[in-house]
Length: 355
Image 1 (cartoon, rainbow, N blue to C red):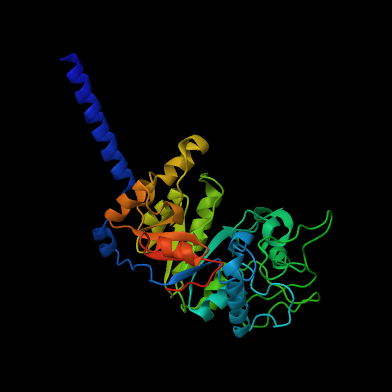
Image 2: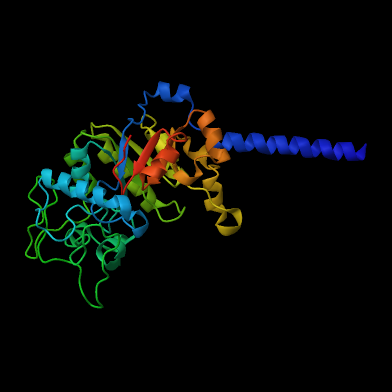
């Protein structure tokens, strides 16, 4: 009898734990979406950090298909009025005005990242520092926007198709001596050293896109800290997007960021970014986030998940509960074909998708 009582407690405890996990992973309800008039994410392909000819994903493993992608990015950027055909360096590096203009010309949606500068401006940049994209090791949080305007993304000797900028020599400055207008009017980067692109303001990107294609805006944070600077980014980013009339959605790896949207902007389509992580090889927070156990804070409309994990148990469960599954980041036609049955929206780079 004692043994049967213990077994009963184990079964009940397991059932309760499973129910708690299901509750924790649950998305926003259909009723809540309807009550707030939430519009779904348009069904287009989303160009990761814009349609770019230098930067993320352009690595040797994908060179067989990335050449066509780089050529398309350059053609579309030129059509939009950025750079010149004889420019030897990149003309549309990742997360630049030229890359976003190129995506618009090609008809692709855009996925981009936002952070704050030292003087509190909302700019589009993925990394915490400028080393990979400009060869400059300084951190974004230590730079003002005016300083950022003088730092070229993937400057020469970078070439089209490069994924990493050449590091600057010790004591060398990445800053140009002329402020470059990145307003998106086609008169780009005619500084004394020639054409270049710099990390733009989100406001300028929104003005450039002007509703031509949908945008996914990622609120970018380092880790899971939540304080005044994180809230500042939420408030300033949301204020800019409030005035934007085009289609957009928001996302973050940080569940509290999407929880902020749930509380303050429930009418906005929101998503949880995640990737699976092994329990014994990662921080407990990363593991829990990968299992979508923070969804109770964000109650997302969509989950943007590392495409390799499209068949994970947690993804199967949340899709059954009504989540839209978004893959990231696809870098070949083969990866797209493998993901097509598991995801309904896709973020891509380094290849030209054949649908």
